[in-house]
Length: 113
Length: 109
Image (cartoon, rainbow over all chains, first blue to last red; front, side):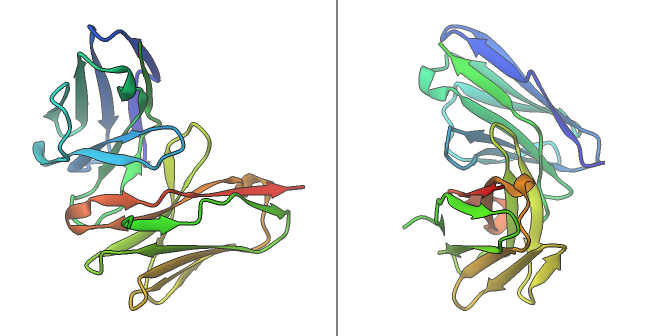
């Protein structure tokens, strides 16, 4: 089973709201990732967690705050977002963080008004 | 220069045709290579990994040329269901994937 789940599927929020995106995998993977994908563009890496520790932050603005409560869960907390942050947010996981296949969740489509 | 470059297409081909996509990458230290497929408004799904010796999975054949920093994907006997965007993906150090812009394929009856 190579399933990564994400909730919610769709989210509409105002610029003053606080919301969270959730990602879950039960494959025993020890690395998890957040990507952002704008329309007609490829995914861009935001964060990498390895063994529940943040190992890479690709210079993402502080209005995006990741959290890894345990090895199966990954959250992305959102606060004071801008309309240009509207995108598809994809979670992925891999067995380990070095040279291993990544499996993607279905994504959360975020619209910031 | 982009790290991973692909022809955006679209490639419009009839059912049953053979179609080939190419991709070049700039980082000679890249360690592993993949083709992902992405349907409209869906997540990327792994199609196949790419090895220097070349590898085949049914109608799909992938090749890697490290000297030229070039990756290819060949699809034989195209099906309508092959219509999608094909993403060339290169793994930098530490499993950080860099995606090409994607090549759009449309297979027509």
